[in-house]
Amino acid sequence: MKTKNFLHSLFCGLIVFGWMNVCSAQAPNGLNFQTIVRDNAEKNLANKNVNIRFSILKGSATGVLIYSEEHRTITNEFGLANVLIGYGFPLAGRFDQVDWSNGSFFLKTEIDPNGGINYELSGVSPFLSVPYALYAEKTKLEAGPGIQISGNRITNIGDPDPNDDLKNGSSVSGDLNGTLPAPKVVALQGRSVQDIKPLINQTLVWNGSGWIPANVDNDPANDVTINSLMSGDLSGTLPAPKVAGLQGRLVQDVQPMINQALLWNGSQWVPANVDADAANDLLVNSVALGDLSGTYPGPKVVKLNGYPLSATPPDSGDVLVFSLGEWKHFPLSAGPGSGASVWKKSGNEVVLEDPVNVQKVNASNASYLTQNQLITAKGSDSTYVSPIGINMSKLIGTTKSKTILNPGVFSMNSGTSYLVGINAFELGALMLKWSFGIMIPRINP
Image (cartoon, rainbow, N blue to C red; front, side, top):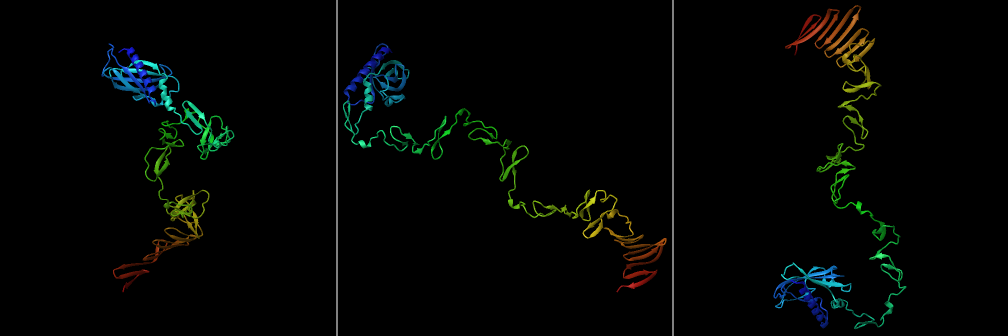
């Protein structure tokens, strides 16, 4: 395929285009293009599928691409291809948006005689005056009030209503304030702009009622954006991080159960059970029971394990000792098991706290009550009651007399000599009693 053939074809196409515009009463929205396609032997390619690509360049033959389209056509029996630029398959830009009034334009033509996309350059040529009729069609003028258009002449035939004209000194309103020619913009789309002198780098910010100057981010490099990696108490990335800590203290990643709360275990916050029934809580002034007495929050301990504490105040150095069913105060050196006896006052009584280890009481007149016996003494004479009977002893001179009264037995002794005794026992229906060595029979009714 020879380049000169395409140049010749392009020239012919432009002449045809010019003739159409001269003869037409209205410019078409396209450019008519005709070309004859020949092979390398200068033979016309008749009835052949060919592809043609047109490109409109701005400024020069190698200028900026403004518009490009592709045509698929068939030559006639003479090898002639006829297409209309502006009606092809668009590849870039829009033909109806080419601003023919802005600078010079060039047409670049490429052809593939085999109907493919292996285009060969046919030529690049400038648009002459004729194509600009398209621009004139777009700029068709219509006369308004007081204007007359006749051919290429526009005439002002007078303002039909000069009262509606804006002039110097005319007042303005809406988003403007003041008078022409120097009004102020006091609003944007009906929303007030506050009259405050802005600082450097400030911008207008809507505060809910008006536009006001405000500081903006002057360093977007330090902005936190989507997929920014979180740290500190947060983990993951924005916009959906996880709270992994509270004030720098780790929160354990465990699914909590219903009514659980976060509990500090010494190293991290963990889900734990809490009081879910406030009705059973002890409140201020709640009555204390059990080993406690009084009310919360200041009850008193009056028992230990259910046993009462002595109501008497302790002395310095006393310890608590369990005795006679209650906890009592003892001096540390005189408590139970120390070998010493201690008298204590309990209510209106004076009692001996350690009766188990007591052997005797050294007193001219004394009596005491222990857990096992009652003993009275005057000098060296004594009387005591034990669980098995009443024993009385008395020293007469150098001889000690003793009287014993037990259930069924009464006897008196002097020293080792038996003085008198009564023994009673029951054998069947016969009751026998001995008195001073005499047996008295008795028949029970």
